Image (tube, rainbow, N blue to C red; front, side, top):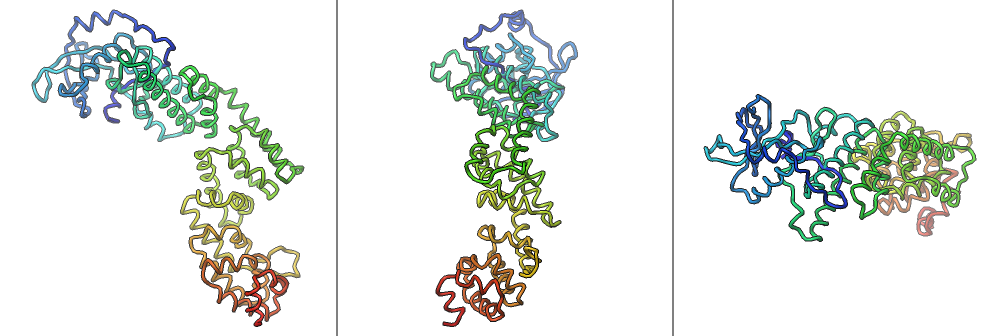
Length: 484
């Protein structure tokens, strides 16, 4: 159907009037009923279960698209009636129907009905979205065009029924709704069924507009804000109002100013650590600013431990699709910076957000990050007489908060056991950063006996931080280590 749609065989929707408008009675009506166009079929463009599509020339040598209807199809009469209604009331955002004709099928020789339509030279909206992000003018033009097209269809007493990015063509800078032969008439329906069909169109419109916003230069969080502006029972006027509010330059600038203001509050030295201040600041943070704010923290590597309560509250208020976008941004930053040693703030941020954030990272990033962290544990070196917090294995210390997410925690356990068997500095590294976690790591990896033996070596070597903290271990561990 994407192939057929490319040739203008579907239409675009405009806003539903609250009272169904009477279809304009144009002079085209007489043409449809009395005039027979001479058509020259040039090339078959596509075929489907419902019809074949041909490029053709009319008697004035103008290119047109001719949709040859298969007579065996159920609903042919309705489809032709719908096409005729649209021909009587054309619209710039709906593929134009010129006339209905009866021609000789070039494949069968039978006399068949066909619809003569404008031949569109452009690409589907789906294809356009695979390229660069939509600019703000493109977003505005395409979005309002789709709204206008759907409103027009509704005003003719019909619904589209299949509005999505494959059924919108971009011709120059104009969006046109296509796939018009599948329209459904509302006239013969009960009130309940009519409302159901209209609501389905409106839901499709909302989803399509959200997709446009996400694939534009606007921050993806604006797509969620757009959805938040619309009530469940919103009509097409409400949807258009919300869309225009999001895409107007004034709104974009206002949101950027809000993000800048909130980020300045977060980054200031006077930021107050604790849940009460965090809750108060979240109350002042609009939902449309939350994702841009977190992305700004990533880009500027501004996260500190004092921000934890605030960041957690913001994280929990993000929509699922916003979390995906945030984690893509975080994963890309960590993947790029960690091997260069510039990992502190964003790894702290990842650690603060827990299991959900770790599991949301791309698998490749998780595997690579786990490998780098576990490997760096072997560089662990702690000189208790030095002013440095850690002399080696800085990245490895993140295993404390992340190891439960690791695919192979056994590798971490083996590296810690190795450090405990080496020297005073490596033993103190384990004592400083991992001793309290050792019993759980041992249980998960089934390395209890190996850890007990290695800790005996560290105690015998008078590794100061091991000796000081040994009583923090379970009683049965202490007894075995001390040989009691």
